[in-house]
Image (tube, rainbow, N blue to C red; front, side):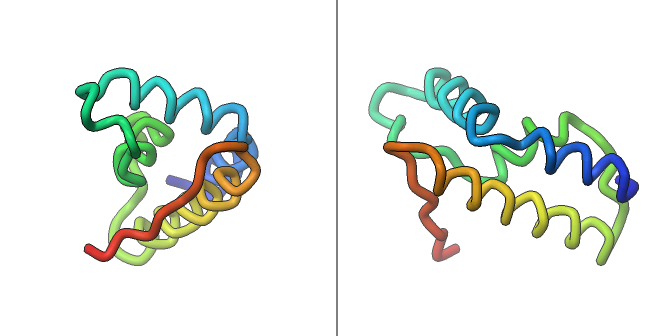
Length: 86
């Protein structure tokens, strides 16, 4: 993913957009499994199959999107980001 596409993705990642994505993903999970959604699942939806590059380029894109997710979640009432221990 080039830096311009990444920048566009990050700008579009508003709390409203993230809330829509999370609520859609949660609604598709089994009723007993609706307490949360994995960041990797959210990430997959947000990048929609775009090529992130390889190695450090891919990792940098992932970490920037993950941080944007954490920042947006902090602005959504009733949602919180929980760091995985895995």
